[in-house]
Length: 402
Image (cartoon, helix red, strand yellow):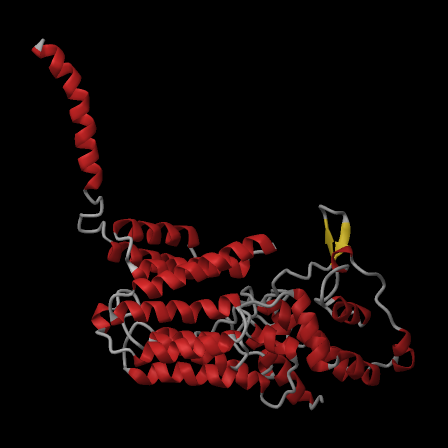
């Protein structure tokens, strides 16, 4: 009888023990705690691993359901996903998640340091979602963050209040407010000699400075401003820059020998991949003038000539196109072969036998493009928006083109 009772009692005991075990928090090891998971999540955000970041923030909240910074991190993840969503449904869903998690971050903030994390999330979300008066929201969040009396050693990820002007600088960049962006990066650089955000602010300052130098003396339109902040420029975007900033039609019509027929010139055909492309007209203008590097290319898959407007342009390709523009504008055909036959290249990464070589030399000897301090030209690297604008400005100056 006793044995029978024990057999009946044992399963019940297992269930009770399991229930008790379930009440013990699973986040009780050295690295399994909300602070650790929050930090890992922010580091994943830094390198664009949004799903990994979300998992880390979820784990942080599972350790402590009232951990405000975890919700701040989830809000940024949702905003990142919402900002890149291609359909309305997905964007709406992510925007709502961002708002909800941001509100919970504010509600659960238990210290000045956690309130700083909330304000930083508010600042970073604004340029991603671009809701009404988003830049004002970003400015207010930055001000509110900097007014907080925090122990910077307790800021788990940001480590310093200068994170606020740094991210506000990025917001101004997104808004194409270049002088204001530079001021924010300068504020970070002047806050202390060394810190987590100083090196990044230095890169941001140099980037904005290049953009402002490129725009000096130019009436850069909206297209130019938007392309200026891009880390790489596509073939279609480069065509738009040439047509809008150099006014190619006007320039060529007065300088190329066939000027009387210029008004009647048209591109030989319209590539199929330009039908719905926003800069279709600009591309057809360059095709009309047969600008080297801006021609359609044969695509073996579709067995047709396509322009491929979204492909990034390398620095070597930009040099080729600029050289052709220079030849057309000056009428000096000798430029096309001026440096052929040289035995030694001044650039370790551009051989004198490279098809880019003559163009690179024509551009660098005239100061239209420049190499790196290391001596390399980086012909195969993508050209960024600031470099493209700066090259156009220098081309204008060298030939007094207006």
